[in-house]
Image: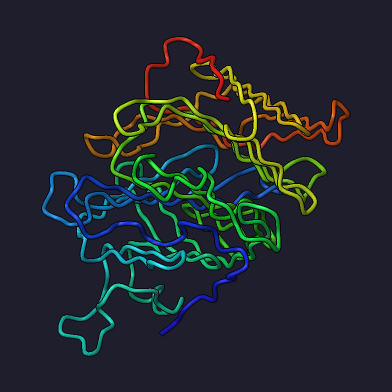
Length: 368
């Protein structure tokens, strides 16, 4: 059986599948992204599974792609028996339409990671991904868009300093259900080599910036925002992920936010337990964040004039259009040490997102 090798030194906590087999309301989502600087485009792949026990109103899976110029593909995968995921490391897949022969011998029909050539031959709709490999094929009858992809991934940064144990993005307590949903950056920065075909155009790439994250749980955030970029002008060794939201803790809600930067082999982390983090997020068009701890401070400004693309996200009522994204956002970043600037960087290929509600007014808040 084909099995993509896993670099244990970069494997983050929560890389494996979280569902415990119970019937409680549950979802898990995965996000892969590749940015192609030479084309000024990004491909973001979003996968989800809801109520895996089956037989519930919202049981099933989905795959979404945000493609060139923020174009969109979405397909549902209602058959839970065609989904698979590894519990001890990053690995998942879901099959839709296949061309296996009825009664075919062996365990070829059992959903699992397939050799790339077998996947291409037999899986007409579906995807599979690990920490070092990603492949799939989708067709959206609603938009007419078709996508096929296959690429290998070389992880560079997980979530934490290289060569050290990797960290939980949401902190130690993200292992417990009292903080839901959980959120984990799986790979802050990596290099992807392969191809993506969108409709009739094929994009070949070598060492393109790649990224991966996930979320999971039985509760759903009321409201959130997100900024993400690992394709900066003249800064190939720089990756940023920042975001915040209102999440449930037992019977109350809290607003939290964080900023994480990997730069030249070092991890700069600004989280509520070690920093002051503040934000001013417009309903759409402008994202501002400031964070400061005992040694460093950072300021982020993200902007866009584009309308963005509505995307589906898990809610109590299943997958709904409750967030808006663009992969073509503008970003400026300034990192300082003791008020001395150590990094200024900019990009026009930043991912920007808002989600949940209400968004009638700017969201201005802070977490200490």
